[in-house]
Amino acid sequence: MSHVPGQPASHVAIARADFGRVSVLFGAKNGKYPDGNQVLIRGSDTRAAFDTPLVSNHIGAEFDATELVVMGHVHEDHMAGLHRIPRAAVHVHEADLPAIRSWDGMLAAYGTGVKDVGALQAMLERDFFYAPRPDAQGYVDGACWELGQSRIRAFHLPGHTAGHCVLLVEPEGVAFTGDIDLTGFGPYYGDSCSSLRDFRHSLARLPDIPAKVWVTSHHRGVYTDREHFLRDLAAFAARIDEREQRLLAWLKESPKTLEQLVEQRLLYPPGYENPWVVSAETRTISQHLAELVADGRVKVDEEGVYRLA
Image (cartoon, rainbow, N blue to C red; front, side):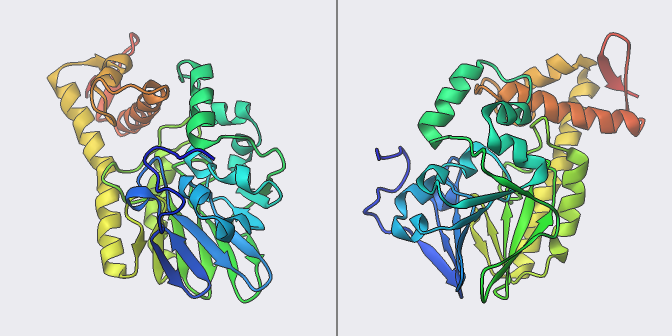
């Protein structure tokens, strides 16, 4: 396999942290997107993995022996190693199941505003080894997998995607929080299946999961100190309110249409382009506007112009 730009070469030792039968193998830059952090569980009966980020292509036999993949959610960067383990059983929350089974399902999850669908698919195949898994099976909130001396429990915490879950390994108490990743970028709820309201609820519920170790898909990596984890979780959640205040400030300057607000870029820097940027910005801003209108702080006229109430 050719070397992936920005990834460690296969002969380079991959940093790791071990917690009993659970191992975390860190992707490039601590799992910063487009990479991620790989969680592997050595059950006495079954070897399992949570998601399959780019780094999984460089782990070798330890990853390739995986018999069960439990996906916390479905996005291209979490599917990048599935091509290596075609015989492994793949389990996905039922709300994300269409996205992993076919390209049409994945595209529907991204949203209808994606530009140049062919270019997007080609990019995912080239950069993430994207290939659908029509054999994937669905699971529901509270699902458990007995691995022998270790057990996985799924907690449905949607928002990032409709099926996003936190996966807890017991008795080690290791929680894989997925893309509740505590990065400075903040919560991402820009897909057609994403929900700002659900993300708020999920962030409030996350501290109740009985974990001792928290592992994020990206950037932050591993937390073993609960107070540190809670501080970073609060800062992550605060990004939602910061975005809301920016929108209100833009509308205070002058009334604007949704299209004009999207041009100003709430998530990404002005001028930044990617096939899904406009779609993600539109979906994100629309959800904030809907909340603000419902709260009576913003009103919209028949021309689709938003202004402060």
